[in-house]
Image (cartoon, rainbow, N blue to C red):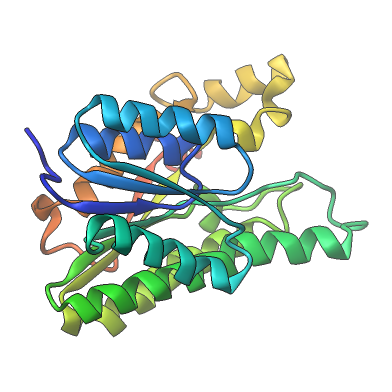
Length: 254
């Protein structure tokens, strides 16, 4: 099955974690894939090598999503390479864990600039290209279970993920008339670079895994399928939706 046959897919934060897993799966499902990355050049090259090994075209474009100019640059270079954009995945994000009462201003500002502002400008640039092409498209944003629940050391992070979820709801309304679908995935605790240090505490890791009905924390690859599904024509009547991918953690309140 090739759910994204000959689609042109762009993914931010595509050199590691969820973005990398989604990029490789998109290629496996028949897409050409462009990834944006901030600093992990070696890993970006590895992802591109995996994409090309699957017989698809790959492109890596370096840039900080916090800079609005990065959005137009990324989309423009992908269009030059592939001829257009069919699917856009807004995935780039950071979460420097910190206590609330002494949260540094620069940590708050940087988190909002990357997670929320970056998503906004990237989605806007991709949407403008899709509208220009005139045949619709699909946008998937990686929000978080943190859009729905709080976190003691994530008071700067959870509002950005709630904002990404809300952005997809409003963009779905704004872009529906252009045939562009906008949805979000809400991962639970996924083992990636973003929480590597936090989950180095083996007791905390075991405690969090015990709260998940499926009995384990998530892996980046667990998000690849849901992202591909929402990007594909199998989800052609789904827009403005949010899909929890958390092993059942959210509903396990008792």
